Length: 634
Image 1 (tube, rainbow, N blue to C red):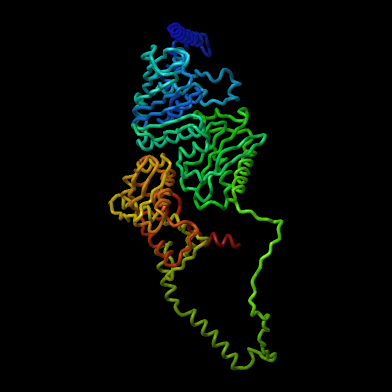
Image 2 (cartoon, rainbow, N blue to C red):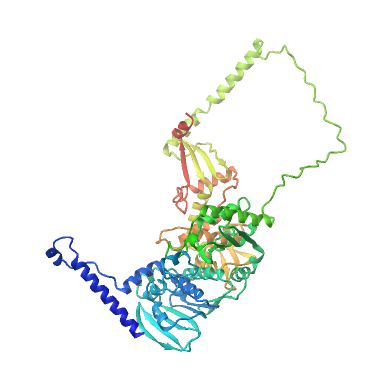
C-alpha cells in the first residue's frame, strides 16, 4: 500500500513538471515578454476539485444516502441497513453484507474516476449497474468526515479508513463483518455556506425517505431497513414487487393495484398501476424504472395520464410503479450527474406502447367502459295500457279577410303602442347619465344595475365602462382566502371544529414528515393532527372555514399545493402555508354560482389588498376593451 501511495505522489510530480515544461516551450509571442509574466493557469488541488464535483453529485443528505445505497446494491448485498441521525446532518450510516473490498480497493474507491464498473468507453453503452462514474465517494469525502470499514468474505480481517475533507487520516487493518459499512459524519462541516442552506430536518428527512423508496422498490429481493434517531421507519423483508409496494406504502394499497405487463421487440413493460377511483391529489406514488434504475420522465408521465383520460377524479393523479426493460445501448443514462434523467433512442414509439399498455390493463379489469358495436341495440320502452292513440289537434278558425292594420282605430292603437315604447325608453335618462358619471371615477366600476354572467363554470363576466371585465373565479377566491388565512396565521384568530369521529389514514412517510414540518402553521389555521405511527395521521379537528369539505381530501390537496408552491426564498412558511390552504379550499372550476354568490365574490375580491393577482402570481382580472371587441367584429 505504501508503494502505491509513493507512486501516486510521483505521478503528480511528473505531471506538474510536464505542465511547467509545456508552458515554458510555448511561444505565442516574444519569449522575453513571456518569461517575465507569472504563470496563471494551475492544476487544482484534489481537495478543491473534489469539492467542485461534490457540488453536482452531493446536493443534500439524501444524495449521500442514494449513492451509498446504490454502491451496496452493486456489491451484491442481501441486507442493507440505513441509519440516520438528525436528518443526515450528524450521521448517515449505510451497512451492507456485500462483497466488501480489499485494502487497496478500499483506498482507491475514494479517488476520483476510480470505478470497477467500466473499463472502456464502450462500457458506457452497456451499463446495468447503479454508480459507475467513480465520483460519489470522492465527492462525499471532500465535504464530510467519512469512516469506512470493509472486509471481503474470503479474508480474515478487514480495513478501516478515516478521511476528513479528502485527507486520509487513518488506514489500518481492523476486525469487522464481511461487507462494507460507511459512516458519513458532519456533512458540509468544511463548507459552512452549503450547510447553512440545508432545509429543516423534516424536509431533509423527507428527501431521504424518497431516495430510500426508489432503491427499495427497484430491488424487492434485498432486505432494507431505515432508522432515524433510533426510530424504525422501514423494515422491508424480501419478496416480490407487490409485497415491496405494500411494505412501503401500506396494506391499503394492495386492493388498488392493477397488473401491467406488455412485451415488444423494442421494450418490455411490467409493474402496477392504480385504480382511478383511488387516485390521490398528492404526488408520491409515481415511479418509473428502466433496467431497475429510477428515472424522471415527464413525457412518459403524460402517456400514463392520457390513458386515464375521462376516468380520473378532478385534479388527481394515478399511482403507478412501472418497470421498463430495454437494450442498454438504446438509452443514455450519462446526461446528468444524478443519473435520473435518461434519454431514450425512440421515445415516441415507447410513449405509444406505454399508453396502450396502461389502457389495456384498465380495460382488462373493466375500469374503462367499453361499447359493443356488433350487438344489436334494443331499448324496450313501456307503453301505458290505457294509451288510445294520439288525439287530433284542436281546430283553429281562420279569417282570411282580417287585416290588422286596416281601419283608423287599429292604426291609432298601433301608434299608441309606439308612443308608449318611446316614452318608457326615454324616461329615466337621468339615471343613465348619473351612472356614466360614476363610471368616470373608476374604469372598473360597473353600472348601477350590476349584471354578472358565468361562463363554463370558470369565468365571471360583467360589463364595465371600457368593455367587459373577466374574472377567474377560482383565482379570485384563492386571493380572498389567502389574505384571510394569512391574517389567521399572523393573529392566531382561527376557529377549530372538533371532529366527532376523528379521521385516521395511512400516508407516505415522506408526507408525514412534511406535515410535521408545517404542523405549527396547520394548527394556527385550525387543524389538529396526531401521529400514532410513522405512516399514520389522525385528524381530530378541522378549520371551521372549510365547512363540510372532507378534511382528509383538504389535507392532501394542501400538501400537494405546498410542495408545488413556488415562492421567493425569503418568503416565510406562513405565507406558503396560507397560499397552499387557499388553493386547496378555493371553489373549483365547474361550480355554478348564483347571482348573489358572484356579487359577494366580486365585492370581497375588490376589498383585498392585491385583487389583481392570485397567491401564485397569476392574473385574476382581465378587461376585454370595446376596441378589441370592435376589431373582432369587423
